[in-house]
Image (cartoon, rainbow, N blue to C red; front, side, top):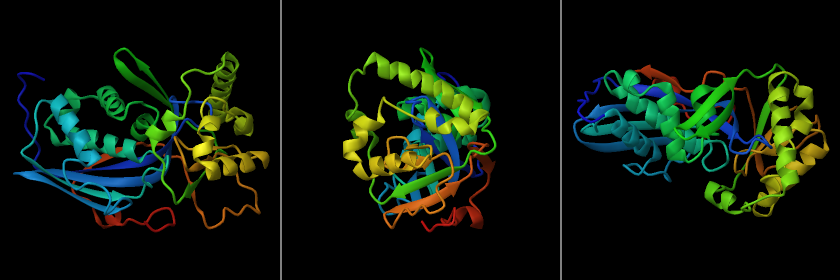
Length: 317
């Protein structure tokens, strides 16, 4: 954007971004699903400085300055758009659990990139949706969560020399997503550190077949979700660091439920109905979430009363 002047819109903008679950079993770093649990974020250009307010998940823990991930993503997008604003005011109402494998960081990144684009005059012509995906994936390090957050639905993402690409596919009727969220947090970096540098050829072939089957099961034949969600690439290697998650996944699968680790964990995602007598106990928060088919949604204006309510999906923040 060298030589292109950057002007900013005067009015505030807001964005609603969905939670996501990546991998879905065998689709490591490639498959993702958008879920109807949302963060609402608003931003406007100010005369000086950066202010961030956080309500709901992460309040009191997340940075409230330039270190906040939404602001960091905005800064990266403003650089791509040609210049930084004099100041920023950002308001976050978070409902996506932090560090639980439900894409909270991807939601923050997508929100930041889209807010920055919306605050720049002719921003969409300077940074189109493909460029937004590439930038968000570059910031996150992989595209499997940012793709469903941006596009909605069930997504297949991959990376080419020019950057990340993705497509969104409709999910078949009958797919029911339930997430079981534990109290403890997980770290993606630690979960990745548990993975070996190489895997047996047979395991790689197994996962390739199951990932292909999963595309068919999610889009056309949900009855095949149990075999389609089997994995040999990452879940067993991560199990020792998440014994409760591993035990719950194994127990649900033994009961015929298509259960997997959500992203890097420790949340568990079930893609078929739970047994009638299932009891998660007090250690797990159970949320039944529809698939979000819209992805990130940007509008003009500040957050309203409904967006500022941190209660969602039948739970308190």
